Structure formats: structure tokens, C-alpha cells
Length: 298
Image (spheres, rainbow, N blue to C red):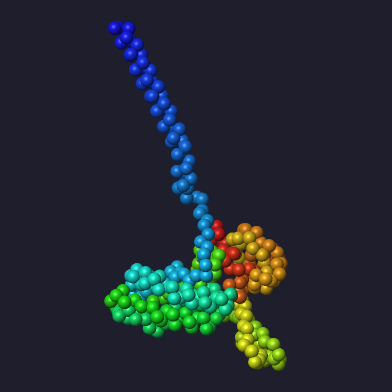
């Protein structure tokens, strides 16, 4: 009996030693494996760069571009219900944009509307306060569509709303566009060079104040606007070609790689007139392909 008890005691002791050793070595291994992944997940020093691409020709309610709600005393009002109602009524605006872009493929940019809302929810005095779209007929249609909105049972007093809308093409990076619009601020086109091109017309008469060449013709004129601005340095966000003219079918002058710095000299619609900072050729690129240098390094 003593021999049996001694054998059993040895077995129990070996089992305890085995499992104790296993637990002691396995736990540090798990912690060692889990440690780096946690640190990587919470490392604030590594910037997160994600693209937010539009999946179609869309209209976005861009609150970051100046959305506000105020009452008659110019006091800020809680906008939560109004935000939800605007988001829920954008379908008509999107259908309008898709219809018009089929006629004018270059149609894109921001339109900021301002309107009043009565306690009954009716919208009145809708007007455009700023825009980066040159198509006046389209902007009138946007105003008319906004006038159809209703905000019943959302407010108890009259309010004034400033509502920025962003019209984007499929594949555009919305995050970059919003950053760009915030950086350049409201439109202030002080020095514009407007070219009006028409066939079979007499020599133009020039208006020195606006540098507009006007020619009479039986067919509608096509207006191209180049807005000059103070030179600013930007950085290429995605590799892109520098075009001779502001369209994708124009000849390529050079190709910019990611990180190249360029000087923005002016803009024409959604195209920027740029020159590489090492005094390279001057041409055009789309505005969503650049980002302000101070934003790029954040």
C-alpha cells in the first residue's frame, strides 16, 4: 500500500508540474503576440489615408462647407431635425443632376442655397449665395427644386438656413473635394478672363473692364472662364497627367507623381491651371488630384 500511495503521489506531482509549466509559458506568448497588434491599432502617429469615392453622379449635403441655421435674432438653432429632413429630400435634386449631366458632362461643383422656413414648414425666399458651377440654367433648376422642400413639424419659430450642396461625378474623391472647397473658401472671382467663341461672326468689341470678347452670331455662344488667383502651392495626391487644355482628351504635357508640389495659377470650372514648382510647363489638372500642402502633412 505504501508503494501504491507513493506512485500515485509522484504521478499527481508530475501532472501539477506539467500544467503549471504550460500555463506559465503560454500566457506570455499570447501577450507577446497580442501586444504589437494593439499598439498598431492605436498608434496615433500613423495617419489614416482613406478615399471616399462617389459610386455614381451624386448630390451630397456638405455640412462642413458652411451649413447653418439661425432665427430672426441671428441666434444659432439646433439643426438636428432640419439636417435629417434635408438628407431625406435630396432624391429630387439627385435626379435633376443626373438628368442635366447627360447634357453637360462637365457639370460639377458646389451650390450653396439660402432659404427661410416658416413654423408651418413651408420654404420661401430660396436663393443662391455662392457657387462654383457656371451653368445658370442648372442653378435656377436647383433653386426651384429646393423650393419644393418641406419642413413640417420641425421648428417652432421662423429660421434662416444656409445649405451647401456638392455635385460630384462618379469616382471623385469626396473627402478631398470638401477639403479643397474649405481651403479656397467662398467664391470671389475678382479677375476673370472670359472668352466667348462663335463661328461666322464679325470682329469682336472688347470690354476693358471684364476682358470679354463679344461676337454676335445666330448660334448660342460657349463661354469658357479662366479665373486668375494668387499663386498657391499644393501637393499632388494621386498620380495624374498635366493636360494642355482643361479636358481629359487634351494632350499630356508631363505626368505628376504623388507628392509633387505644384503652383496653382488659376482655375477653369473644376480644372486648375498649374505649374510645377521647378518652373516646368503650365497646364491643367482636375482639382481633386491635389491637396493643400498643410493638409497633406497633417
